[in-house]
Length: 485
Image (cartoon, helix red, strand yellow):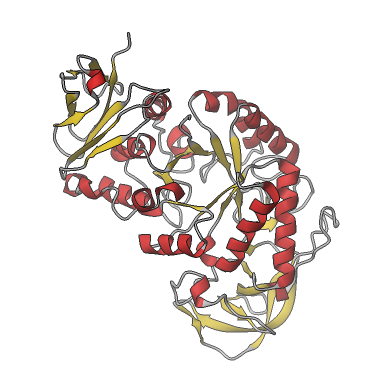
């Protein structure tokens, strides 16, 4: 079976030119050639404007088809270009996962007046005012779409909270008052700030039966309309988990167990992610934030970081079949809300760790492969990633044997399988030049191994018992494969 690789096909500063879907379509053949088997696309729905990356969701039914927010296209293009890109990716056997933003809505068409209380931002369960009338942007009528696809209109009853009172210009976190109005139960959302139901904009109330029904109807329409193969669910720690798990079951019932769903749960600890998986009966995957955090810490600690702990308390280590591993993404890149960027010197080691180990579903970041734009651009690491992708596609198969026994130098071997028998040996150091004696298989006895990354110019001959003395340069990564004949 071919090793799979997901690619997040955007970064925060992708050009606002409406041509991103066209670029993706043109890139489909190349993506297939380098071993990409699925693509995670940015939010493809009408947002607050074309300069919105897509998380300020306005209309989930507008894929760049209607003149709303003064323009037809989204940041990334128009609907027909989106569908053309999906079709082209499918032509090359690449699945497409859509970034789904359900937590909130932004850019309402009208204001409404309703009762609310202010809450303490650090403890959203504590009110800091009496109930009083405010004016909020909560009325979504979509005049530009004019009831196409759905006649549903949103109003204040469909939200739990907002952060702005139009009547006096005051910014605060407001809990909307009314029948059955409250944050989600404390044990159904993350408990940071007491209750982390509210994140931003107009917070959707997923205890409201009309919203549950409308969201499910929309999700079915969206998949049927586009041919999308799966969802990446944004900010799920802020959404009532009962609704998320219900939605997952609904999509699988409608489109089959092969419909892929991964959630973004940016927890502060591994235990939070593990508890979420257990609550959902392991019916979805999660992005492995704990592993990313380990990479970041390792990159910023230099040789003070104990590499033996690199995979500790991660989904890759403990719930590998539900782990989407990544090095960085749009949220962790510099200047963003969850900035935690892995230092460039450690990037090859981090990508070697997600692409060449047996466990986890690795996700490659567009910004690492094509570069990050914006006011402070960052150069890509495409050459080294291409080499690692080639090794993953051709060598990183079979049993994995770990040698995680030194604070500054670790390694592992992959023994190969029937279809890909050659295997490989991986070794990395965050300090001085190092080595590892590692077993690669008696069938490799007498074979010459070279570092495919060319970081080491030495060669390794496998001894009669299948062992090799593998070398790594200081602060570097080497991947040893059999010399081509």
